Image (cartoon, rainbow, N blue to C red; front, side):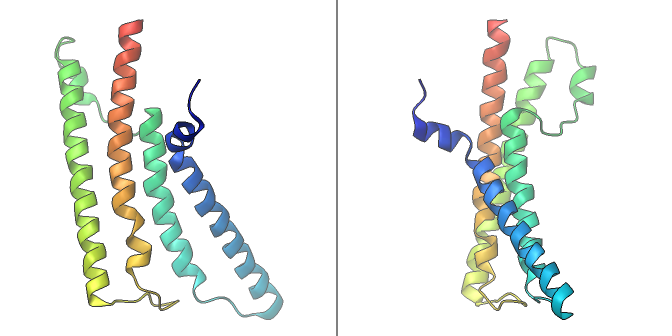
Length: 160
């Protein structure tokens, strides 16, 4: 039987996406309601929703990677002899993880630069790095889930 804590960690992205989507739905609905009733709108909703979509995209990509449903172009691997295809897939995995690690690194640099410069968002006037803080975690989570999915599919292939 799996430890309940591991079950939560294993589905972390789904919980994060659910919370983000719920908050976005409530904010969007409230904005429509206020605009309909008063002909005014909340100026900051666009800022919150835009950043919410960015986070949904990153954490949604982690969900797809965990499930092995991420977009993959396998034309080159499919053209290789059957014996070479697994090596090409592992090489692609290594390149993907390297790219995601670099993305996490540069997003962390961006967060530090935003914090050091004191830049604020245009709508709510909150520090810009608040919105960017989850991006490095998201990219590292995608990399982790890609590796997890690769090992799970390798393990499943050996059991067949």
